[in-house]
Image 1 (cartoon, rainbow, N blue to C red):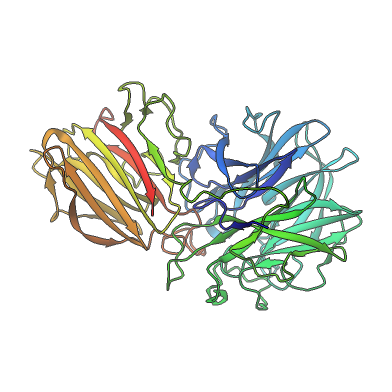
Image 2 (image 1 turned 45 degrees about the vertical axis):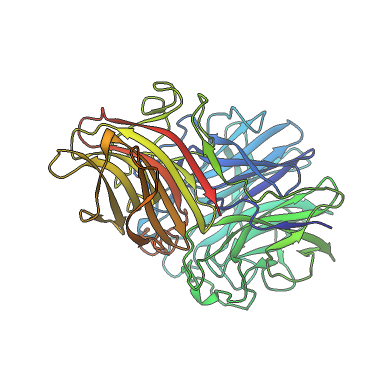
Length: 552
């Protein structure tokens, strides 16, 4: 039997929610402060996945001002076989200060997985991580974490379930508090309901989305419980299977649970699917730290494990609860898992640029980014500095490996010191690296210089700059194990030249940034980008000939 190699979706693809419709599989993942919001991937074989669309593309959410790591959390896909409608539930986390976690949850529906999706239907503000369950009797239920703010009560709260009228999103009857979790790991969240052999099964994430993360399960004959826990008393999937007692502990990091014997860390937040071959799989998030560190620049990625039912309970096919970097593929389903599927080579020859481009905080609109004003180029009009959470002019793609390069050719004509264009690495508004064409400090000539943001501090490398004739240069950044090297090639020079020295950018990782107080930092991952700045008149633009990402 063929093996599926994990992760199946590399780079920022956390909180995967999987469904099957006939022989097609779809996964939705979180996108936080990035637009378009909610990535949707497709597969025929569970091994190879391709981004096919986003769910929130028409200004359904305003992400301007979003602090790390708030934004769009934990989308949940479902399919109502009676109405043939696709449903997507999601949370918009708006505030995390004071550990209040103010979040509004919504649902949208569509007749097609690629949309168009309906206008958002408001569900609740009781907590976050909503999921919909469409029962055989035609009733619909929503499960969610009820966020706890009272002093002295077990955090983060209860898993609650209610019947819901999906026509208008109204809750029918009362919320039912069903559990604080099924093990001693605590931090129960992301509840999802399934039905199998007469039981309702409640699948939840636990242990915080750090090194103690895991997937837990309980079952009941009644959708509102009571739910009995898996008899093992431990998660059914985790990267760190040692016992831990952390009820009420708000620490999401749990660095003490790092497993030195595993490449995969943080396995948790699962979603269950039954295949057309009558086999069972769970997709779940995971992380891969930089070697000899606990820093995760690629954020939380998507993996999959084959599962089996035994005595009415779900367990991994190998009988353990330790998530693996390989899992058996579906029976009699042949596949070849591509190793270069994450490479990008866009020469902007089409009106639509690569679907994988995302933008932090603001929407992608043709008024500031397009391929039409100068055909065969991506034109980006500058706006705020990259410290802005409002209108940064950034077009970015997910980093997917520890060894890769990004490259472009850029032409621009800055006439003010606050105008720039170039290429870079980006985590959020406080943390990035930018190799850009700009005016020198005397505003007499165009130069190439490196600008860096680290934990909100700005560093402009004025000692390493190169004059750029004709206002055009090819730029390249090589990323290797948390270090970045900037290279350039001018029209008059056919050789790549290094600018400055290699730069430690390992802080561009989930644990290395300054997220909301009380959090581990972030969990939104490293991106590569093309970007333009104009804090002058907002009329400056740059033309990019191509954008390539090559993973080694």
